[in-house]
View 1: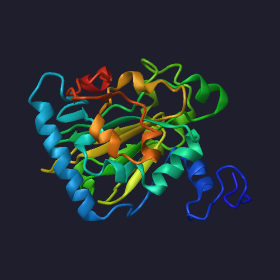
View 2: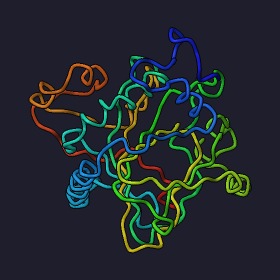
View 3: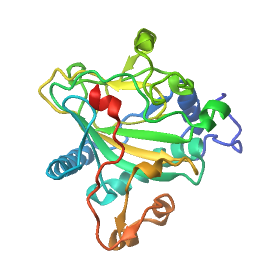
Length: 283
């Protein structure tokens, strides 16, 4: 795909300086791309405070946090748990990426974070859910996962590992459509690229691109924020329970409300995680 498309072409560069064609190209080839320095470090430090507080709350109740392998936990949260939620979802690069890949009517379906603690082990290679028909037959992406690290990632902290280009594998021989056979691990390891994001960076990937967290040899945890976004009809909202209060909803910019089609309630109910991945728990 050319990155110097005419200015009136879908996904072309616009006057905001964001090259939408290049973003689409990266997600359709490698299955992952990133923007370095999207947020100031002070913003990320605030994010870390909110994530740590949410983890303590979740770990104190049944079903608040779910295991994603030894010493690795996932917690889904409501938008209001993050003081920087609007900054994140209304960031020009995030909006441009969603529009270029998923279309103008994309929906925010998930906010959460994954935390590998010291001693977390290599995860099995996996994708986040089975490949939908649109991806298998039409070569179209219907969901995206944005990640924001809360630390400066180093080699000993169990960096994220991705196998570029694997988003288009049908997964017909994958266990539950998500876990490739171990006989294929050598091929994925040959493709594998480790990522070392720093505080302020944001990445985006197809949830179908095969990936895994690696072993955390350090004495530090490595929380990573997850923002899940769907194209119309993708259906991943069925696995999540986002909600906002009426007061919070009233304060949101209209262009954020347009993409947050979740219940508006008087009082929030803490989320009991539904998106358990047994293969990662067994890891």
